[in-house]
Image (cartoon, rainbow, N blue to C red; front, top):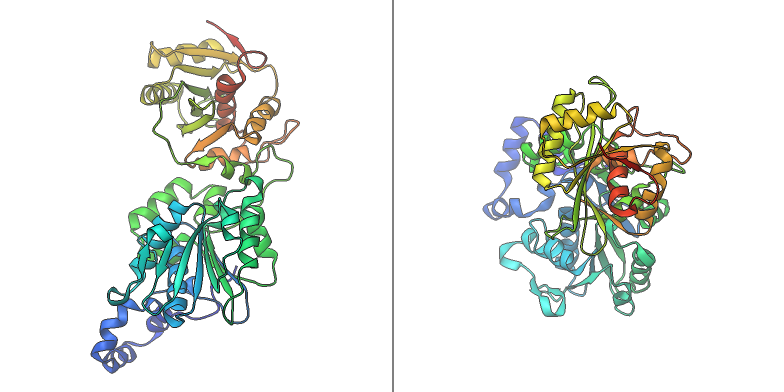
Length: 443
């Protein structure tokens, strides 16, 4: 991936000798000094700069905090301030995100504009208007037909990787946008996104009319709190999902796996404050204290009949007492109605360890009569049917899901999909009942 075809001003300034820097600063008049911070080129890193040459689409594909939104907003600002006839489409996954991120966000168009000449936002018209006559119009990718008819000279499409995929809405939205991009002398689009393995993103990457810049979260470290970088690297740094979310890499799916990245992304949503009908905590105990992780997954059934994965509380390298304590704490925190524990590795021991941690735990032991893959297939089908949601991001769990193969194989990280196996038990209990597997044994 290209990190930009230009050398940025901060790089030039950093490479100059101290005497050259002093000479440069002394050469600026007072107005130039006053406007220094308002000029984005004075702080932009290479991945935020438009590529040279002929292109239709500039794809900015970077990790979280890379500065994608700021790059898109500054590009639109330069177009609008330089051409009063510009008519710019602003397209996001939803109308709410278009407003909250692209217009009113900390890195949005209003915030990045100079105080003396900020555009005026007209919410009722979904329009942003500059003093020179340039205009930008908000659209939702969830409503592709809203782009059928309007004409534009330029467009900024934000987070295209999370545009709605059902009924090919993302593709239809993009196609309608292209068909209306016929004003002005040089039509161009900037698309900003965290990489996702969705058809639209792959289409753009394969197009000869696309130029790509991007990089990792750390490329924008000068503008991010150190605590944020340390926290996200600690949480996601050693996962495939971390390569996607932090390094800005497009992770390829394992061909034939029961889960794909796209399938999980389609199931992702923000945590909801709702009353769940039932909460289940499932445990996949390790074979030994020095073996695999103890998978601990919390899932719940909502009033809409959809199951939601709420938490991954798994622990690694833990003694039986420690992982049992983690189960008890998670059960209390999430008010679990039932604790499901796989009992193939010493059922009586599992039960006694859990009850020693908390004698009131509502434990139910289950024995696996079939292999992990066979148990996982009907759960993967629930995802395909749209009956499961991930209330947040669970990097290690999702890496394991994307490595489970039909027929018993596993090609994910680690020796065993312990977290994924716990998820399968939880969703089986919530969604598939007790008509078949797993068989429940009461002790």
